[in-house]
Structure formats: structure tokens, C-alpha cells
Image (tube, rainbow, N blue to C red; front, side, top):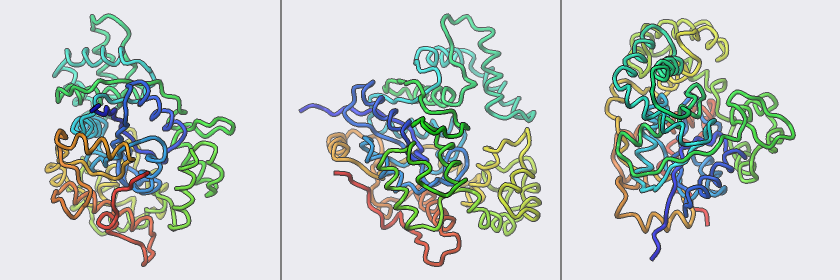
Length: 409
């Protein structure tokens, strides 16, 4: 009997677009895999924002576009900084017995990233201390990382081209490889050139490739789904039209802000101080901004600064909205389960074949597994549903208990 081979990818699919489809197909082709396993963020994402649509709708998009298994990346990792995000995702892919993982990068070659990883491993504690000192002085983490990296490359004797770690996808790919090395994973790291537009780029009519950010921006400017159909596969279109017919809104902070503002004002600075990522007295600034600004844009413009980037603040707000504290995060440092959101028939065959070799238990029913991390995922899904419902008394919560993994035949 031939053993099915899997390659892993780390995704958000916010929403699934044509660039994502290219990634899935190339990942499978490049690694000669039988199945593609996606570790996907739940209802709140790495840049600290609510997902455009919930994890179940995004799972349907993925399975309808050549992904075979979707596991949920737990909240504690999905909403974290790049190193922690990567750590959680890679540990899950390794636990799922993937033989390789594949990511998109600006460099498009694995060699420069391997050399950069070797360089930083050689630098050791000096590199990490440089980053920590820069952050302490108020420099943003991405900038601090790049400055430490540039300093290390200037003194390096490593031959060959190094990766450009000022680029967002190169940085994330580097952290995937770093996380795999830390656990001595046998997975092979592979990368393909990123083909989608830049993260902040607007959509361009006539070009079928656009970033998820550009796609969401285009939709929120017009609130017309047909304005973005050129950039997404048919299955994504169907899922988004289904979502629009069933819900009051799509996920974004502008629509969630009334509930977020209420939460900030109710908690007050003293309790905000206990929330994960809230540091250095910013709880007072957050509270003052919530008292005076009735829109999310006004609130953010009052809070953001060179010291506190938009993304860093949004992560704080995500944790405030969900009530995720430092104490809770300290209990969730390593994934303890594989939460199955959906699978194809090939995915089902893979899980049946590998079930005795998987390093973590597969959770298909939320009520059948006890874990503080899983309870946080369920709680985050409930809070997301309230935000999407926007005050609708009929909005459905506790869907994680009555939604079964999606199976595509």
C-alpha cells in the first residue's frame, strides 16, 4: 500500500483569492505531494483584525480549491507576532506528519533563506539581545529585526546571497524555517515566488491577482461583491454571496468598534493592563481615545504612533475584545491538538492512513476535548459572532459546538 505524502501550508484566506490558488497548486506540484494540509487562522488574524468571514466559510473556500485538510491555528498563535505565529503553525504541520511545508516569498528561492537562518543561528544571543534592546527603546519589532539582521550580515563571512528580511513574506518564511529547526522537524522547507500584489496595493482591473487587503478594501469602498469577483475563484464568490445573504456584515473593526469601545470603557485602565500585549501605560491612552472617538478610524489615529504601529495596536484590541490576558497566554505556549475544520476525500484517506502516527490528537467535536486553548478558540468564535451580528438578537453563537468538520466529496 502506497503511503500518501502531504505538504503543509500556513494560511489565513481572508478571503481565498487567485493568488492563494496558485500557491496551493504550486505547493502540491513542487513537493510532489498527494495532499495539501492547511493550518488556517480562526476568526481573528495575525495582524490583529476580525476575519472577513468566519473560519467555516473560509474552510469551504479552501476545500473547494484543492486544499485537502484544514486544521485551525489556535487563537493564542493566530493573533501573535510572527515568531509565535510561525511556531504554532509549524508544530501543527509537523504533528500532522507533513513531509514538507511550502510558503510564498519575495525571494522565491530557499537558498538565501537557508543561509540567512544559518547566519542568525551563528549570531545567537547577540542577535536576540540587539532586537530586544531596540524594541525597549521604542523601535517597532519588524524594524528592530531588520536592523539586527543588517548588522549581522555586515560582519558575516557566509558566502552566497542572503534573503532580504525587510520583505514581509521573506520574514514570515524565515520564521517558519526557524521554528522547524527549533523542533528538529524532518519537514523539507520549500518556497515559491509570491505572485500576488503587495500587501497594501489596491486592486487593478484586468489583473486577476490582488492581495487580500486590496480585495477587502475594494469591497468596503462599494459594499458590492461583484466589484471583487475578478480576483477570486468561483467557489469564493459563492461562499461570499452565501455569507452576505445570511449576515448583517463582513468582519472588520469599523463594524466591531461599538462593542470594542464598550469593552474598553467597561474594563477601564486597571483591568486593561492585564490584557495580553497591553504594555507601558498604553491602557490609559486606549481608554482616553475610546471616551472621545466614536469611530474606529478616529480611535486609531488618536492612538497610533512610531512606537505603536497599527498592527501592534490592533493585536492589543483583539485581545481586549476577546478578554485574552497575559495569564491565559502563559498557559498556551504549545499546541496540544489538531482541530479539524474540514477535509476532502483524499484528506480523509490521509488521516485514516496516518492516524496512529500523528503527534497530536485530532479534534473533530469541540465538546469531546478539554483544553484551555480550545475553550479560547470557542470563546473567540462567540465574540466574533456577536461582532458580526452587530446587536442582532438572533445572531448565532456557540456554532463551534454544533458545526461538524466540512467534508467535500
